[in-house]
Image (cartoon, rainbow, N blue to C red):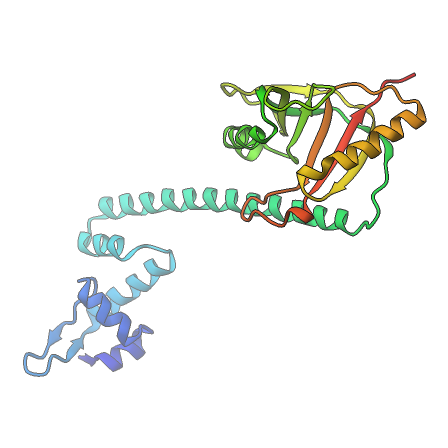
Length: 270
């Protein structure tokens, strides 16, 4: 027989682990000295320790290991436990894959926001935007209501969401309580979902300006972009767009002074 120290060296299991396995009735010593309480192990214990290490390496829980050890030579029950564990691992892989995708999206958004922040002077520019597939909710309400709309879209679309959220504004003027708003999130493909419209938002020519700062200061950027349109004789059309490149984060609220919003006002071809 082997003392606990010898058995620890033979099996590669720490004395702390051996005491825990004894407590959980996973690996019971062959003999326990009644007077001293010392544990002694035999060759059969060595084989059990090998099985435990193998199962632990495959991320079995102690309770599952206990079940497998107790089944002894019942192959059917052992196979059933292995299948159950495999299914749990597959679910974990799927869950971790979704977490990685969320992290990728956060990292991508932050990198793009940092690049936009590096431009000290943002100027009005004319450009062409592509048509995109969007999931959207149109409603009348306050401008701050868009947070709830975006939350609903992201919950329903999940990993199909593929771009930065934005609002379409169908009013030509400021509205206090009944603004006509369509909150939108680009998606990779269509998915039917109650209360959410999936459609293609047509692209075209627009006047664009990057606004850096709180949302309540967007007015100064609108002044700049509308003045540009008047100067150039551009015929603007609604809805206008506000694309939220960086705003309240998916984890932290962030600093409003570092919020980045792209204003796009569509212009008609002459």
